[in-house]
Length: 132
Image (cartoon, rainbow, N blue to C red; front, side, top):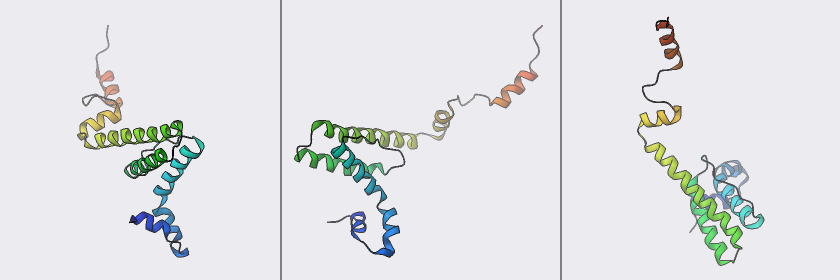
């Protein structure tokens, strides 16, 4: 049975072409990543803006098919690496999204919650008595 994205990819009506190109962009990108790894031995890492869940599913299926087809281990390793990197990236993104807002702000700013802003610190220095 075809997924909705696969069905869109199979449609070839000129008036739907632009819409289909956008709708199937993720699938096309993952097919390219798979082909580059298997055919050319080239690794393309995952990016946080990708549909990582889709990529994991597609690359896993391609990996299993490649094993059946006796693709060299070096090339299979590129698919395994993509899967591991994608899973780690997805887990990290989910962990950040689940973190309480205070922890997210601290992680993004690299500061302590009670730390003074640059302007506040400068005002404190000006207000402090001068050593004699």
